[in-house]
Image (cartoon, rainbow, N blue to C red; front, side, top):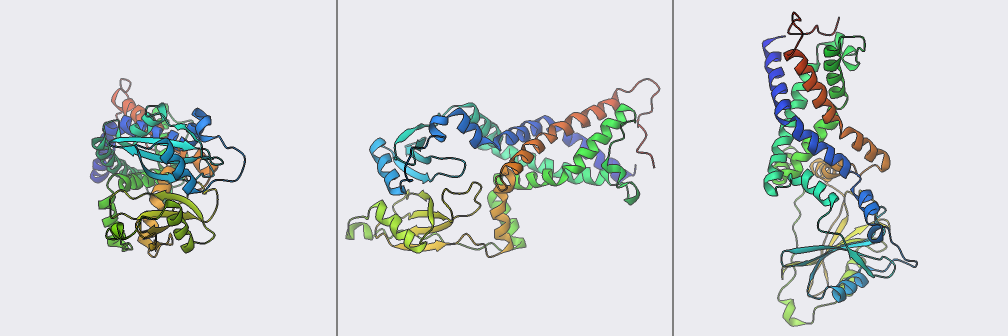
Length: 374
């Protein structure tokens, strides 16, 4: 082993020892969360799987129902039913309080709220924030860098020349068990390398979004989208239009499209955001929705932002989240992401076992077990 390979081996080894258990927890929790909506639907069928007969009510009717049920709260946004969720989902706030409300799509009846404390929410908080808030998210970013370093060093260590390339893709089951463990570690690592690298990069984009977008923009400039504002002066000139008329105004910009989501104004100069999808119900894993802004005082459309991306950098940014959570290819991709999410645990177990076999070897056994035969 050359001096460079020895150095890379030490880097790979000690990063793996230092972060192995952490990566097992984060990746395993993320693997389970791939089926988050299915788990929630199973846990709360009365909230997520209920659907009365009749056509789906429109978004304005949902806003009216929320105003009646939560008069002291502000509605932050509403999501229409999707292919995976048959009910409307809304967020209402009051001060620092945030509630997740589910409403029947056929009657606009409030079905209830998702509990603030549950196993699924704890699992989400563990995966995203390590149960420690913003500090945990920063640690996750550092962990993503560590995983990226292990992917790079591991791939270099795996490569022993073209002659051994095929041999490095299989495990010799007749080899002594310490070498078989090491070969299993190498084979699992190289077969899952692309996915681990992908998750490390996309995790970086989610934990350090501003810095990541700056890097992407340096490679391929991102489209600059100015966010329009409502004309505050219009608040005193005439009565504010109803939500129904504002949504109808946005639909004139996207005739025949389905209102998939609305985001209500928070500040005085914010505009109403109406997001459209091509189909109803909204397809699961939709990467981009067409966005139309509406002046909250005049009810006129201000601008529209098409989901079509104009640069390679925009396409990269649009794919980051779907690739990380695996919601772009239906059930087969979800199953693949679930299984692959447990591979870091297998890598940690085989790597630690192979390392232990080197440290606590039988008396008289050489420190380095024989390499793969030529």
